[in-house]
Length: 322
Image 1 (cartoon, rainbow, N blue to C red):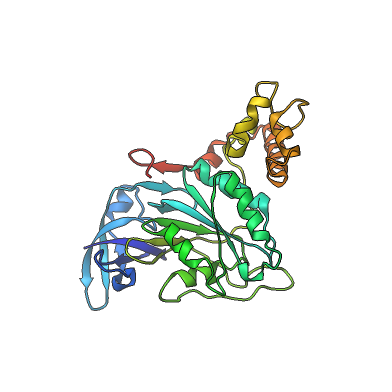
Image 2: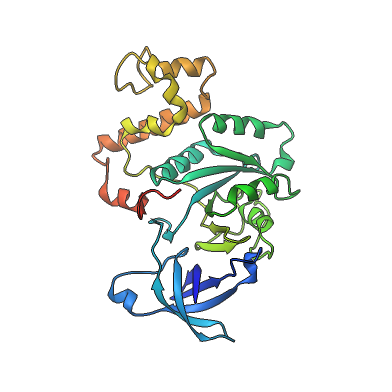
């Protein structure tokens, strides 16, 4: 029998065997499986997201053994998952206010791993000033797909589901943005804990502690990953940073000097575009902060750290999958 690994805990793998002809992925069954010893001997480890073949041991108790791993389209090192097609990062419009420096770091990390990103701004029901539209404009200008939703009222959920359809999407976001509530809106069976924001620390009371694949409709899955509060920039030179700000590209011809850092130079097309309001000042200021961070790391001899780079890269099979 074939299936997909939804979760791995304590040496057990939970394999979802769905029926592709059914409209609802939940119509399938989940088997608790062990991996055969051959994987350890070959130094291979099943990952969440893997498509596998398994032998059923007890159909009534839903137990089995994973006998083989099918070829992977992709393999993400951190978190250790397989066959992801795209990433969805969730930030709240307010309560807590979005940390755009953290958002930019996430987008860079996903771009390094050749994954397209969707930015979801949650809590639209609390957006009395309409600031969410401005956030979407800023990140739309840099080529990102964006959506504004409310897990509380259901606003934007249909549009978000359409973006996820037919894909395996890794879902991430800092604590307190309503990630669990939003995931509950996307699935038929509510299985995740939710909690109110702690007024004192502005963080969610419930956090995801392991990666878990959740079946939606048909061949649509979301991969819930632990929340994050900080991200390093691994394996990136300061001179490469501007390439991860795609809105800069149309203005670099205005830079007088080759290799312009877009920070200290007097004649710079990027700086002129910021002053003219054609490039978001907030995005530019984040670029400057990240550039300075990379400059400091490189001055200490820490650029292109092989170990860090290995942890942040994605291994693609048979070329880039799209």
